[in-house]
Image (cartoon, rainbow, N blue to C red; front, side, top):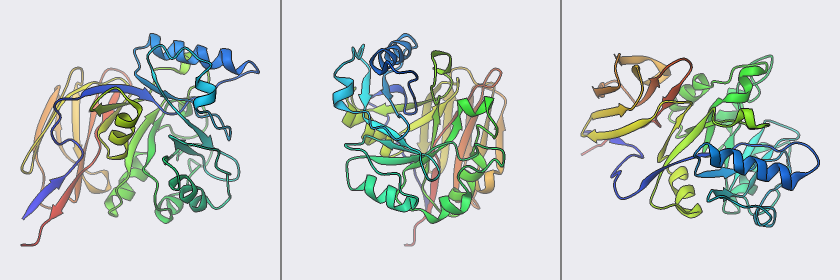
Length: 294
């Protein structure tokens, strides 16, 4: 007997909250730049934000100088030097950027935080973070499948290829989208929409850890319903929805705002890509197929 193991059970009693986990200030006046960032995301209707300076921890002391404008501010940084970049989400301290990135992941795991791998396909070789490293490492929560700033730099802002490789091999890795903010014009290009019990840091982070979110660059998902081996996804503004399984192979397409599918017998997981106007998308997290032995 088969069933679906997924993060979208019982979507009731909570709220969808929109946020960015990857952002950087610029210039010497850090307090002014941080406040500009908060103001920018507040104006765009965001609910939470993490400032992820390169190898500089931003936490409660730095946030105390800011008017949060109601945003939930999450401590963290981007571990950068000596290897592939990693977001340290909900950090409680600075973690040394060891060349051995497994040591970094382990050190982050010794505290309340977790790791999200940044822009895997950045660079002229489209391989900032090699698939062999992603396979080797353990303990990271997810990876950026869309990093908006890479669209204007060498490489590919999308990383669904590596995500599908990992998922096909049985890894449970959540997909994230990020602005990678460096200036106000970068805000609102890629974000995560989290289904949270309430508007608190702990609730938001608990939802992220368990994959209770979808990622977006413009498409809004309004409903996700699972009944036995059937999945129903509705959006507000998609024009096409594609259902994919292992190796990224599509098995169903609906040229409308909603789709209903029965998971194929041969699938080990399924996920959905929702296509909107221009280069607007949304991506669900994977629904894993479990073969239960009686």
